[in-house]
Length: 152
Image (cartoon, rainbow, N blue to C red; front, side, top):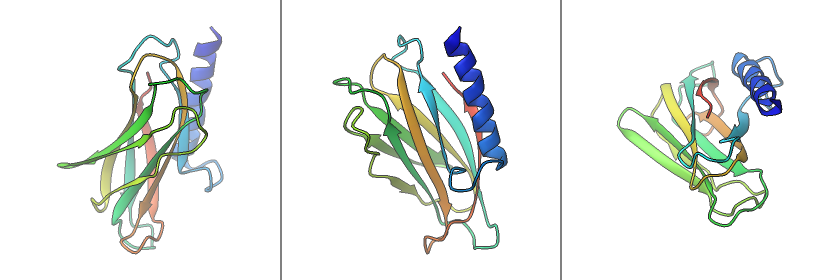
């Protein structure tokens, strides 16, 4: 029961993040618990990131990064994928629960809708954080909004 209440609270926070009601420093970071019951090795969370020119220039690329915030479990790793049109990238946090994020990856797709998904390599609940930023070709931050589509 506590897990359901936590998930509802997390979804509310993610919705606030997507609407920009939380300080902009936090507005491009989201996360939660994937596979809270710990029995779905293929659990995947999915979000839509909208990149647009907010006056700082058109989007050149989407930057993504994932961090596993759970206790270390051998062989249980977190990854994040981003795709737009016919392009896709993957970035993995290669050390389980070490408090360091993945190296980060860039998907060059211009303005528009990108999809990002968080996944893991085995069954087990994982708490994670995702960082995402729409950037111009000269690495200036530009318009970035997120919508949570699926939380497993």
